[in-house]
Length: 191
Ligand SMILES: *[C@@H]1O[C@H](CO)[C@@H](O)[C@H](O)[C@H]1NC(C)=O
Ligand SMILES: *[C@@H]1O[C@H](CO)[C@@H](O)[C@H](O)[C@H]1NC(C)=O
Ligand SMILES: *[C@@H]1O[C@H](CO)[C@@H](O)[C@H](O)[C@H]1NC(C)=O
Image (cartoon, rainbow, N blue to C red; front, side, top):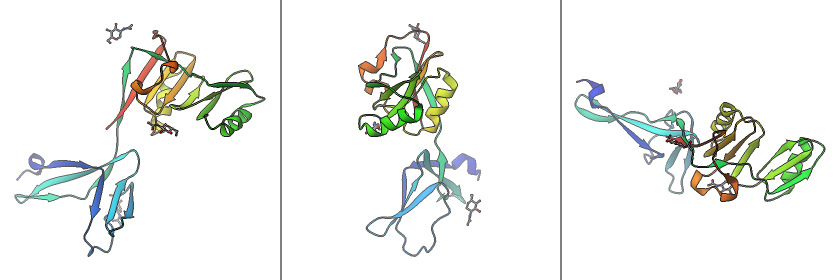
């Protein structure tokens, strides 16, 4: 029988092993192995990975293959309904970017900071998680790919890149601005 015609893929977040007779863990890379309070082994894929298990028809019977943790793939859904902006709740004069970072570390509202030009330091709060005054779309998307918590990006050409840890509908109005063709706004969709 042709295996390709009768194989299926199961997708789940965790795999729980209850078989106490197994002395070794299955060989799954990119996963954490933990024991829950009942002594069950709980296998969870690392962040950015999802568990995929294949079911295969072998000699007319369905057999589970070993699960694997597969890297999730992200794409970007662009929108032109609004522009986004790196709204800063506080600005201060500093001598360098290290001092700017220190100020942010001392401010509980501050999630990230950036030099906004010269000696001016901007402090930002969530859902903003990253700001840079670099309007390059590719670098902004690359940064969002590196940050698993990044859900929405906003750029203004040759001006800034701002990243948020929430979807577009959850971004406060104060962090939005009228859309213009210089803006790139996109939500990250990972599956
Ligand atoms: C575990 O799986 C990986 C990749 O499938 C393989 O390279 C490695 O040799 C395996 N390790 C063991 C102990 O079987
Ligand atoms: C927004 O995008 C839609 C669909 O891509 C397009 O029809 C529309 O003209 C755009 N609006 C603006 C203001 O660019
Ligand atoms: C965004 O990040 C902040 C600070 O880490 C956190 O408190 C908040 O829950 C995050 N929001 C989401 C939707 O992850």
